[in-house]
Length: 133
Image 1: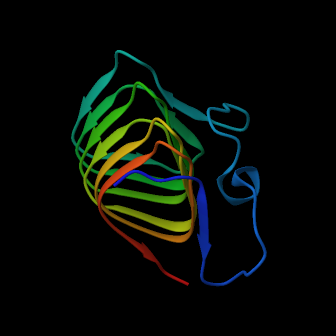
Image 2: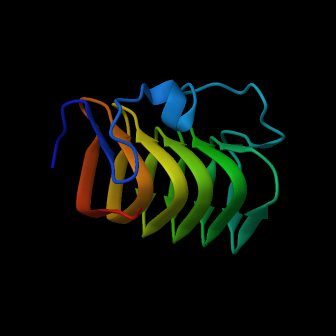
């Protein structure tokens, strides 16, 4: 399914900008962990810090803080994060305890569960989404 820009929230009726919900797309400010383009990880990846992924991960991804997946990223496996901005490809279920943003370049296959969700025009989600308040 393709989206135009929408904002969903079960707990807050005021409109939020993408920056308020999940942070500025593509920003590396405040990120402590980087998986660079060209890097390939197979297995479980866990980070207690803000993380940006521009490489490939085949396996589960857990991020205790903010997760940003860049346009060149590819993840095959389940993803958990406190907050997230998705710009790349993910094939697997995603659980975000806070706000999530799908940018125009995001391609997700699976079920996305988040407290709030911002979807930019052009983002693709092949599956379901659940807004968990």
